[in-house]
Length: 224
Image 1 (tube, rainbow, N blue to C red):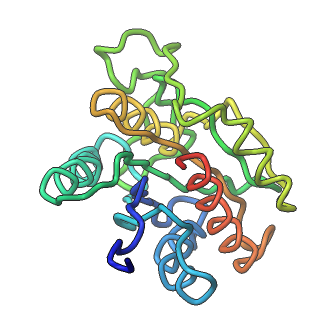
Image 2 (image 1 turned 180 degrees about the vertical axis):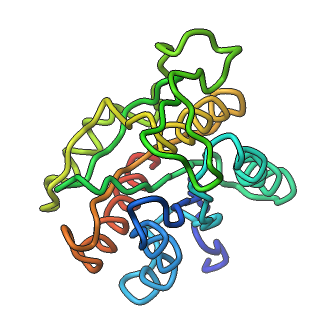
């Protein structure tokens, strides 16, 4: 009686955002990810059964930032192995900005193509280059295995957010990171999801923080 302790976590979510890049001097995802834990604690805490494993800010770069990206991805596997954690699912949740967007987009897939419209923050500007050459052609697609994405989109729309399901994460760094993350997820038995958000001038910071918190609630409900 009374000695059961807290309920076991069913999912550990590792969250990433990006730093500034060409044309976007302040990346909203850096703010969202850096403030997420504090925001959740101030509001109503984490959704039941969910743990935030880490919050990381990635360099807005492709090839030149691969080593830190994989160090970040592998850290989730390492921490799970080193802890006597009862969490049975690892989810990578990546936030990226689409400066032209007017609503949120849940990305279903990434394509094995890097065609950067401008140089990344390390000066790389590939054109029609396969992200992972060993995966074959630039037309190769990897899809998230985290539920039917439409269910996530519908749940968020029911909460009042202007949100859509997207099949096109672009060909810039967001797609580059998502492709690597989906490939890593497949190889390591984890899950990955990418979400595009607008600029704060389009949808304000408070609403975007609320959206991030609501998204975690939806993910937690899918893991029960």
